[in-house]
Image (cartoon, rainbow, N blue to C red):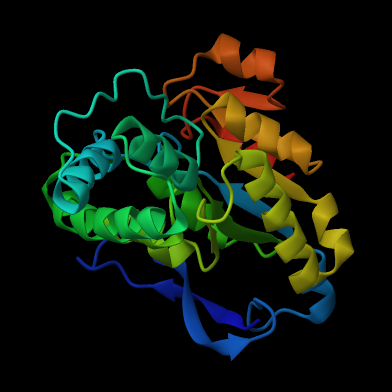
Length: 269
């Protein structure tokens, strides 16, 4: 398997004001994700930070669920789909696609899952530019600071399909911070997705890389998937889960949002 090789660099602000932003730039392809200028020893000692997207980095005002409902209409002619009982937080899109198909009395065969996935991606691409979403507090400041920290490697681990995850990151101009996206396309259970991410990390950087991972998320499912792979979890109260629910799940650190100085301290120490 080949993956993108990225080079760290500073991007000039578009308006000419303010500090440079540390971002990544793809410079080729190879068997590992490397930061040019770092030594192999530093590379293998890097800590991996897996960020969730929805409710952690940004919100899209339910654009995803709305696009999925519309995709069911456009692809299968299923209107008036009742989704009030469906819980979205911390689940994978593969799991949600199956539930939507069943709710619409459509057999959740691999073919139908693929049809709905493709239609959903097209629909979401049309919808995202029109939604009144936002990057959550502290994210715009935290990501450049983390990207500029030599021993940290940023990645996304999300229940979104990889292609729709990238759409969201691109729409809100966060894609440059995340050269690696692990999405919810292969696993119905989020903890299985986390195990797959940990296995990929070990193949890229060696087994020792499993020992220094932090998951940043906003749901109890994020906490559980972190602990499933022996990682710590920084939980943020910017999603639908309450602080109490995140405490009960066993989050290692909880902050109101990513403006909290404790977030940076916890991630870099």
